[in-house]
Image 1 (tube, rainbow, N blue to C red):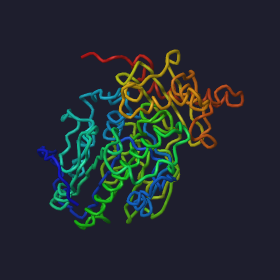
Image 2 (image 1 turned 30 degrees about the vertical axis):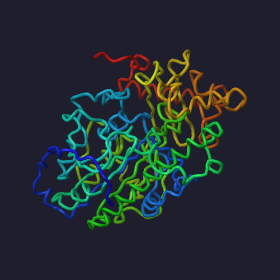
Image 3 (image 1 turned 180 degrees about the vertical axis):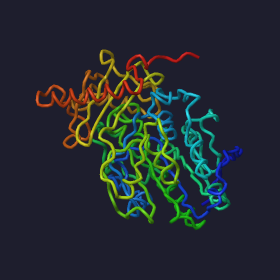
Image 4 (image 1 turned 135 degrees about the vertical axis):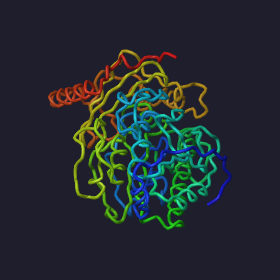
Length: 456
């Protein structure tokens, strides 16, 4: 599938230390496809009703679909740093958006070559600019800049890479969809009057028309997934490759990206490898992005890595393990995306606790809530709130947050009913709060003191 694209210079990549291992070309490959700001609920395999995501659904039908994968932070740079390092944000250093990773941290680009695998990336390059930490071989073909108005791509680069590699490979295909601005794809595919909006969204003409542009980018994402699938078939390596699809964090909509709500943290995780993964299987095991790297190392036959936060979930993917983690943790520091507003969270499969560490101020995010923003999402919420009580509730719920929020995810997956003041949950809240504080201490997370402007 060919489109116009901008060429990128190929960088040198780490050389595998075990030459005997690297010659085992029959070893399985790895391809990880990651979206950018995807609301997982829009994928039809996850219950979405607005479009059939045929190619992503095919991976789910041929593999395993995880329903409790969570981003520990709903921002691209920090969560991708977690994905590549196996560390939570406080430990890898990128605990604010676009903050650099600590220079002494090792990533998958250090560990994977030790197993004899080539490690490469195409598309969005976050985190970037730190070759001592993230030394990916760069493959041309997919759009790099996530705010690009146009996103043409070609699979020529990845096909050449996959065809010519003498070693097994681990390739990250990083889409920029559906990151705002929602300017790519065909919004006319969707009828604004018929689309189904999320329950935490105001409903008016402006939002419905905008949402069609967002759905068009999800269609573009699904097309890219189909192209990668076809490329693996073309080079004859589909069934000898572990293919993983990840949704990253939620969209640039209220309660999505830049929050600790489920809409921002819950993320698609689909894996296909017919030799080991049962087709059409579903798991509700709790996993986090920190688990991705150790899972890939485990799959490649590497040694367990000490002193990281991630835990291999390979046995979950193989259907041999029902549970994985007891808790999923969350960290949000709002600077530089707005005024300081540190948030911490913890959840199991049923309950979610959120601590807003500076609840005395209103939450503000500079992109979404910019009065001059092209998308006018927040303006639509404010205008609707003038006459619609539910819209006013959503505005208040988003901006005026109490110190403690507690949700029953089974009965309230959109986290619209705070149960923190209910006496019957007092003991559970205290026990979860104690677990969260224990995790923060273990991480060296000083809470509100972390959400400060960085010195140049």
